[in-house]
Image 1: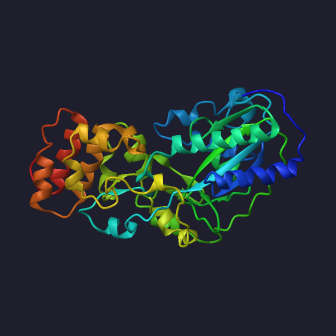
Image 2: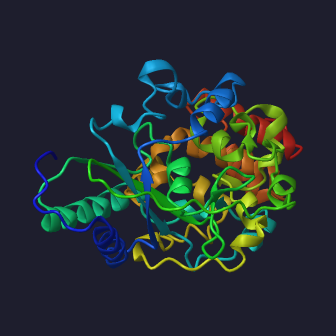
Image 3: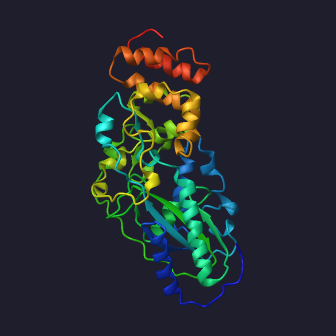
Length: 361
């Protein structure tokens, strides 16, 4: 949306108002960054050069040279002068994560994915915030983003004083922990940047030690190719066999690094009802979910971020988890029911799971 700014409201007062309007719309914090991401582009370049992004080609797109949109927000919105960043908590009253992980018969789904998809919800709220600013200032140029374009969200949030990048590479905040989503409004408004907060990880290495696949290869450095979230969500083909047993019962994402982080001990609960668990996903058993047909998957997970991996990868992930489950007739019966599945990907992982259960495929 482009136009002339309708009034000359004091920028400091406007910032104060934007924070208040953001809170009214359900955001837990709002910050302001300059239209640059100092240092983050160099770190991304080194990460890409190491091949740590795996099959996530979109991470490399627009990340180098003159067309580096990640480092130059003005390529996404010409005339960008400042960036409004917002944070929304998603931690819900879901069943205890540690209990779910310890019970090999249950399915573990990353806490962020238990409710409705955050993309649409955050984008809609950011749009409402932009509309509210327009009411106050008159029309102005802006674009709204939530994990939907080459935007360096953590770097911008860090510049905005919303937290620091933890050793697990996620944004951390002393009172909010890391259980939150991020979103941005790129704008041509002249809003002074907030002061970044300092790193408070200290000598703690809890997240590094907790990672089930040792994907955090060094502080602040993640090899996505080893990360359970990448393997269960981003990877389209076979999960590398040496890593399968390390996935345990994690069928969509992984929260181990966040669960181990001391700053998450008192992380607040979300105020957003849409992030509460749906269809009992925080309590479901592996056998129960493996019995879903594709129509069940599509209907029950409509509006869920899980649906984007598709039914085939859903079965692949659960087959691996069943292979890691405590031995039992029910588990073996469930696996055998999919042994002749039309998908070669599913058949491969079911055969592995049956062998791991000590049974001939």
